[in-house]
Image: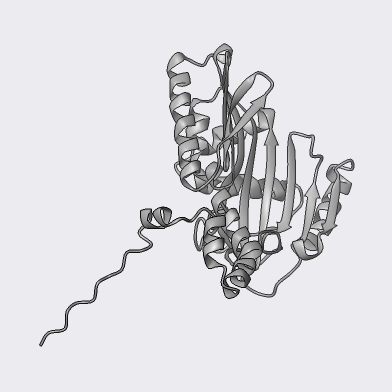
Length: 295
């Protein structure tokens, strides 16, 4: 059983839902869905993400960052991931007629000695499965520098669990000594999970209890966590623009420095399209005038 751990993050991490006219969706719900789709895409584009066309079966729409929205003559389709799912899943759920998938997650921080929880829970789940569910698939993967993970169940089933080293997987200091417990629900179980969370006065916080209860039911000795330290702990996902800037810093900057050192700065600026009028338009030539010295 775990001890000296804190729950630091509770979230919905993925959602796929539809709002269909033939499933009792009203015209008002469709109108809300259209307005919501515009808002979702607008927010993701403002973060620096591109808008790309999306097609799935009879649905046509757009993807930007962590949001996908599409429309057909039957209604609307939404797919949210990451921070977008965490922050806006309930808005989508409130107008939906069906949820085909929802991922709920809890992140815990080890406050004492670090331990490979994929190994700890592997023995627990296998012991539980021998008695309660002999056909349950339980598999541990050693991902090397990406960390280890424990997979419980079949990915094609209506409930599938993952426990993994979030620090190694994310490469983020936000997740130092953290492990993620994540359950992927589909079909009826997805709808039931969303209904349960939506009815709570703290729908974001209850996501972790839904996830952790599933692992407890499958033999994981989780015990009681210390009081929540911070929710959420994660930083925003990198946008398309941030990835481009990272590429410029890592892949282009050294070449530009070399060309500049050889007296080709003007050629570099011209090659990048950074003409004087472009630089002037962003205030590059503006200088703060020093105050005149008093006599």
